[in-house]
Length: 398
Image 1 (cartoon, rainbow, N blue to C red):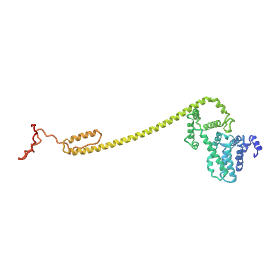
Image 2 (image 1 turned 30 degrees about the vertical axis):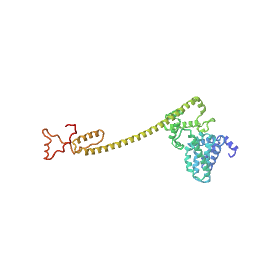
Image 3 (image 1 turned 90 degrees about the vertical axis):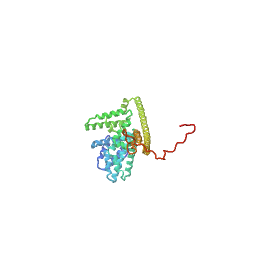
Image 4 (image 1 turned 45 degrees about the vertical axis):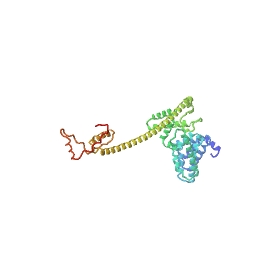
């Protein structure tokens, strides 16, 4: 197969690559490396990619493997257990085959590349690459760099189709729930939402028996893969061609282009309106929050002023009480005045409670028939009550 004639002869023979693929079951690292090198080269020639996929499917059926690329990933893991020349050769051949089968043939399409990348991710290739990234094999590291760079570019393009402004690609891939949430946000306000939600409701109706449900989910997975991968020239992956479906013809029969365009325009307007209302609602919330803070500040200042005025009034009341005690210390009306002040203070809500001046209430009135006391004695001789009043002016009489 190192020349064009031999390669053409091998491809013309129907089961030639199937026989070569069986050699991957050999315990010899050298044999495995040769097989993977051959398959990597065949993937890059016209018509060869599909033959390689069919050969890997035949190997999986014959060996009872669950995944068709399991033998290639296992060969990579096995070769990384040592660093002999033949083991290094198998390392490079394994990673070269993986990159060739992803990018060769139909690999020009993003959907097909991601379809095969998902298979290798399910086999734990990413975790294996993390462990072998330190190996001193320059050719292997080159192939690993090609894999990682292609994966990052394809993931960014894939998840750029959905409305996702919050999560990273790694978070979506690691958590299926976040992937579902991202799909939901992307479809909720589009014409895809009704069939998407209907599909989920019908999946809910699958049998409760776990084995039956697993088989039916496998069929659903294959049908979705066929729908995604099928192009004008047919199904690029024979493993995903579960049945004879012509997706383009079915789509043409089911959908009217004009109606779809009108429906998309309607949903687009609804989406724009929803986003506009959401912004207005956020703006209103911010305005209300600012007004609330302003009112709280104003009320706080008013309360402080009222407290200061109340303290001043209390201080003035106490000063007035002290002044009244001094002014009316010998007055019989002091108790009545203080009682009047007490009532006024209670009406204003203060706790002012003055005490009567003089230490107690006024004396009771005298009983009937008693006088206040004898009259004052007369002045002694030679004493007068005071000087006589001055004479009246002329013209006035007493």
